[in-house]
Length: 416
Length: 78
Image (cartoon, rainbow over all chains, first blue to last red; front, side, top):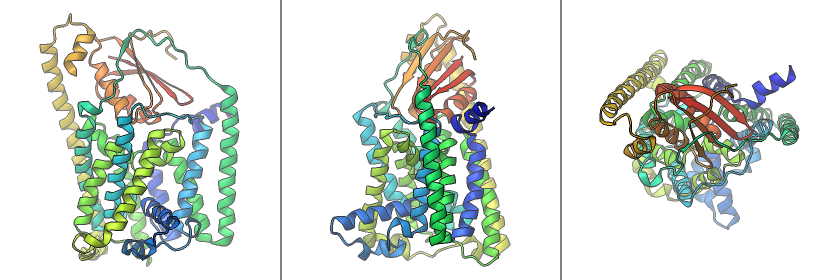
């Protein structure tokens, strides 16, 4: 009984479809309870700011940090404790499933990809004032036009990123070998057990820390606790916003993209009701910054292999590649913050903060958001059909050209 | 379990991030003859959400998925 339960909930991965929708619901309550969006890059930028402070710089005088704030420590901020909770939740999940192993990048090329892709993504996200979360998944339900600009630009960016990632230079060198694999993957029951206990300890500790935080500040405690659940969700279901965009272009898989649209649709009505009760939605400049930032972000996340949310749990799983992505993100975000003053006026701050609820009226804005979500869903379906139709015609062509007696190796060479 | 199935080919991919494991798998599949089975072994946890559904979407049959610690093993028939 226990073993089946353990295996099903703590070891096997969860359905990403359900988990994304759960994240949509949870992020709505997160807004209601803390007044903030579920977001991570703003806080990572502040961490970059703190590091600059250690080295004697005064980032608190930079305009960008005046906008996003750099007071106190991560423990004093909703975003800070939420991320600590998320790391705790991810770590518990990784240990429960015994899914932790130091995995080194396969080549120096990959490290460069991780670092450079991470920097481009970090820079782009902060230029647009948000990543896949605040400028997309939790941004669109806030009715802010900048999130729509970002989303479409990011989709285009991931298309370019996919083209770059699949250049022969970057391809994987793994090749197929005949026969079954001789190697047997051994189980290590002692390690499994020890890690399960350790994971449970981490989980208990972070939950107790959240409750302790609630004594100090209800809002911060709740943010931390919800961070733990977000962490569990993203690791257990391997939620990946990057793959949602990228794999539409590369393999024609639209499962995750559809799930994200449904998650946003669920969240939208919830945020709408909070706004009707008097909360102010988070609206940002609908300027070229959202488009350029989205484009850069899209290119960067595909080259890096993961976005701001994605590297968090992969880094804890021991995938060294994503340590580099994380470093790149923070460096890129800090560079953006440093140069912000030189281009912020023409690209962002001179533009209006447009909220669909103001433009079309409350019901009109709600209707517009669902209309756009519906249209995006239809676009995804059309793309999927186009992708597989095209592929079928390519395959038919290939079967005509390739003689059946050719060996597998030769066919492989033809494909390459 | 499908211990009875003997794979015709194997593909090992370690330390590679997405999309490479899925792309390498799909490319390898095109070199198989109909009915042949490919065994994919990878330590990319994220492949759980792409290799099986990509294989299905591209018209292949996923015979088995097993998970052992960080290792994932897929058996796919063309």
